[in-house]
Length: 150
Length: 127
Image (cartoon, rainbow over the protein chains, first blue to last red):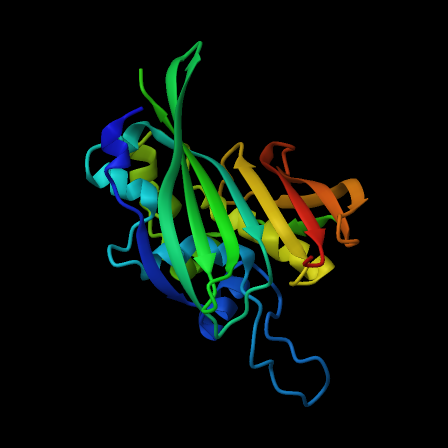
């Protein structure tokens, strides 16, 4: 295991789930009317569900404006030119709504190498945990990046 | 889930999504840069495709019912591609607390039948 990789500490920051950002995301993702009134003459809902994929952009609210993989690149621990995005997994422990203020912690969770016919691949697995104001975990994202080592 | 067709994907789609998420990687809007890196053209953010899948699933089952979504990006989505989103029930079951959940196999295919994204989802009420 590469000790240097584990020397990069987890980063914790606040993530406000803004109504306008939920709507902007939903529209950009071709949701035809994310703030659709339910009946004629009814105002748009004052609370919107957070589009699932919006959680991946929470790092924009972190102090360094970086996803965890970029922190490793910046420290020279991972070569961006040799890195590909592998899988992405979301788990929602409960629905998330606009108006919530979540606490996010990004960290490197697991590193393992795999020998393939094309050389050594390093799998870097990151976990981003979202907690409510009450401290309950409401969402978890697991991201896998693959670095070609040889 | 009823199959959903989207597209053709335009530069405006990718710029709107870049603006929402803050990902201004030049692969998604700068043709000269993309060609200099050996790609045939501008391609979409992987999260754009995954995000449409997420919205399509939640529009179908309701925003409170998505428990898990797992995606793997298999091929680029190029400008001009038309996409077809599909999800079928692979397994339906009752959780230990009595909630009805289902695991879905999800796929996104381009008009020329390339599978650009594969994934899975779990839907059901919170336990």
